[in-house]
Length: 402
Image (spheres, helix red, strand yellow):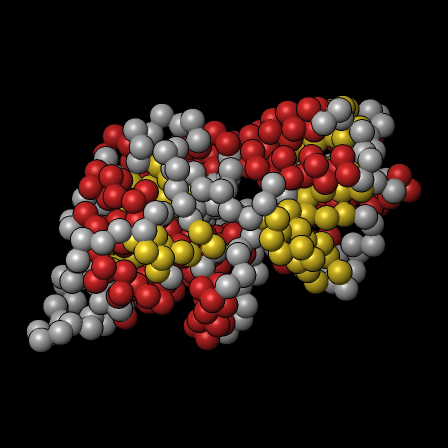
């Protein structure tokens, strides 16, 4: 199957007293999720989570009496391709786009969705720049801002008595936004940033970069990046600078098996820990994990991808609340279905729809936990701490609110 165009359609409609509509009467929604390129490990799993949500919604009756059809366009983590993907989806008349995977692509796409008056919901774009984007209220996300994650890392570093930290980060909105937020938080705690270095993509060696970093005598290093280049940076550290005994902090972009295997599963003998958006333990989370395992034959690797699953349910409920699949109406109902009403989880989608039809307020409680959207389209949700132990990613603190 061509991963750049992934269509998930399930034609099961549980109607009462009438036959299901013909397959041509589907309701298309779009997604821009990376399935090739540097973020593809996360993107492919994210698309699986979105697909599961569509299938479950359709099995519970669809949206506005029609089965959802998910049309994905692969952006390859490139803003230009992301814009082209958005143009293709907007030409189809979709009222909602789930995505993009990377913050830089999400911001590029938001300029088009804003002008087209189409709702965009990202499940993984964590850059603080999304909060202040000029999006006319059409841009939302179900993952928390890196302002919160950076604050957590800064406090973790200070608690370990580190006072001198270096920051190495990937180009783009994600890396720069995290570096800025960490700098603000760490210096407010009395720390000093010895150097900030943006790394170039696709290098076969980062020895020069690490030499510059270590010339500033950091006590710890924060690495904000993605699996392939991040693994090369750590490989160069282990080969040339391991005698420094540096404690490394890793961000959510590195929480992937590709990062572990790229470094070497049993090479994580140095001090390190990572952070990432977590999920609140509870019935919706457990049910999701069981359903995902049944559908795809394995556990989900990166919990941040559960946020994209919740984004689909929020979009579906907003369309139900609006009574129409139209972008502005969806925008105006999205916050309302996310908070301040009777709680309903993903498995209670049909009951939530019935409540909306009765004029009741609902509060969608996601598989990732509460997804209470604020006026900026942001959520506050927990983080977890992870490390690599015995060759495997391990979450050793499942839920922390910064």
